[in-house]
Length: 294
Image (tube, rainbow, N blue to C red; front, side):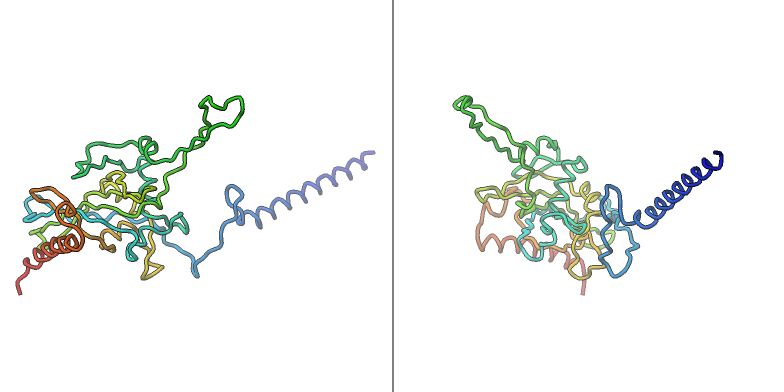
């Protein structure tokens, strides 16, 4: 009787050992394939293993004292994302391959409270009136109400409220940039600092509607970590902060600081307006050119 139970115990131990071996093999061969949530890790799309972690640091501006600024001019310019050179700001429309459009990055940063949104005013913005993310959702998210068709409720004015439709960032085709050009006599250079950016979205009637202002030095903390397509080299990845710092965009001036404090479109239109914008641009260039003696 004793020998019978011993054999039975051996069989149980063998089964336990076999089960344990199966578990070990599953861990060895299948654990690397599956990641958290049961999703399969995607294969490497590059011909090499990327070792560099894409996390850029903010490059601080050169030190600047008020006493070193010998000339300054504030201008406002428009960046039209429909121009080919500005397409890296607009695409991809939906986030893909680790990249997202500039407006998508900006919109998410505002909704998450990483960047404050300020009220847009016609003439200028002093960044003093903050718009909360909840207010922006109310203003920009689309709500659709459908009347209930139940016979018992017809004519009672009862409506079924559907979930709000998130704001479509692909409707933003234009940004207004406020920036200061100045001469730093300490370094003997003409330099520029972007102060703020205001997006404009296209409504159902084809009108460009201003949304809000964001303070650009605050936005840099976000866009420094946002990769963007580099048309010259795929392995050298750029950020939106690089595009602004290197002036990799095309734009046209719509206003300059003046005694009248008015937009160019208020006193000239059409071809004359473009010529006036080029005139302002030329004046800034001549100021820089006059710094040097030949």
